[in-house]
Length: 331
Image (cartoon, rainbow, N blue to C red; front, side, top):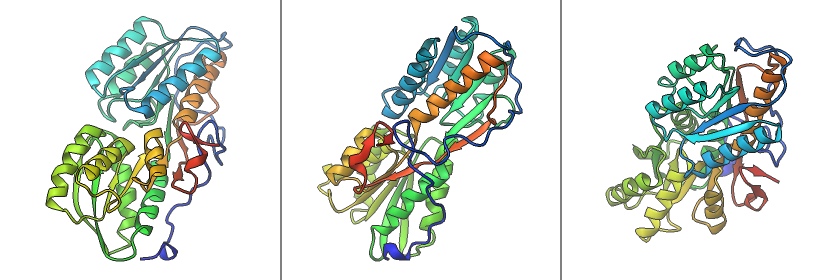
């Protein structure tokens, strides 16, 4: 199959990240439907609590660092903690933010359903919550849900993936945590593109729960079952890099096409090294900065000019533009 035969189902609107340009950094201004408690015409200052998954993942570290830097630039104190994708720990951290009388919470949540109750508790205590990266399965509670356009970005990755094969091929898919809405969105977007190419057959799909170690272990087993597999497409870069390591351990480097998602520095280096094909860059830094800026607006004015649901487009990173990469952005 040739790249020219590809019918693009979704089109990237621009590069993402705080260091690059994006066609739509935020949606058109309009009044938010949520009405969190906030004193009008207040001064900037006080505590902004920033809660993310484990910062061992460079994506989550980048969003936590960006939120902290932006909050401190605007005159706030910060607390930066990690829930490690544990809903119980997340609930404890939100309780702590409430007891510390935080002015706002910036949260990359620990589950689309499990997070609803703790977020509602914060809002009931007068603390607005700004979600980044992951949505929850409820509207009208969080002040904002600012996420990368996962469907658009994953479609770009899938389009690059199928273009890498000139004929019939087999592939394996590694998916993320089932409790994370992004995992399902990305997998569905991959399928929407790849299903248009009947010569490309998915021989296995396994969850590796966003983990590099788990992806490595799963891929070791899968490569024993499918030693002639042609490709691996993963729901994030950490799983893709685990697959790369397993492929190398099996002596198959250069024989298996690997694609991921997030735009992490290690994945971009793997693209430069020729061990990965592509990744979909999520604008983690930009999204975190927008959440803090909108929290600041609400704290100072008592209102927000942005809608609750906000989607920021992604950009494909491949060998053609990897040299322009900055931290989760393009120069």
